[in-house]
Image 1 (cartoon, rainbow, N blue to C red):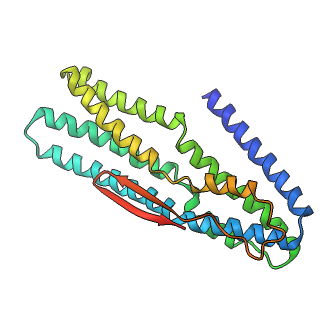
Image 2 (cartoon, rainbow, N blue to C red):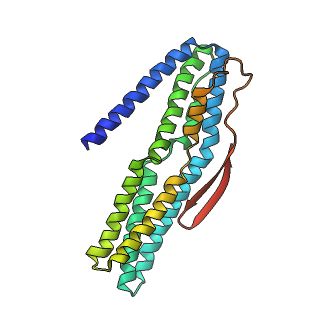
Image 3 (cartoon, one colour):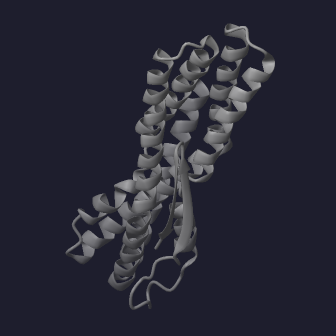
Length: 240
């Protein structure tokens, strides 16, 4: 817990420092550059919203349906082995649904949050730009965490525990526990690798650009196709 608290403190400190630096850059930029930077970030957040919401809601619905479905199925099952599998499966998918609720992708609502900020004067736009850059960095940091080794490790711990329950607690063959782990880990990895990462790419592109002062209109990144899968369904779409 102490390590997690220290890591959280460091992340918050870095975000705060980045916000201060952004505010200083915004004060030194011309109004044209500020306006173009704002347009770029707003377009980035707008473009990433649908994919973020699709991923979050898709997995939330999939996990929830799998949880309630398995609970209902085990009540009518006459096989002890099947009941055990369904109960353990319901527990793991239930944790997956809780994770989607507890740790949503902020990219799904940051666009509206930024749009609601006042920007009708040059000074207001400078203040808004500092907030916009902070929001984009915040979204990128969340996406990076979602793809990090920590997320893979957490999923691994949950699925190993599920396999051990099948093997040791229910006194089943080790292969049954291994199969439970493998299936759960496969679903977890699909969830992790289908998580959108647009904010990460957009932030990198934003930090590399140097033509905001002269651009007539800030343009967003190129469109990218994505595939999102969840228990019971697959979605294909395009992010603009």
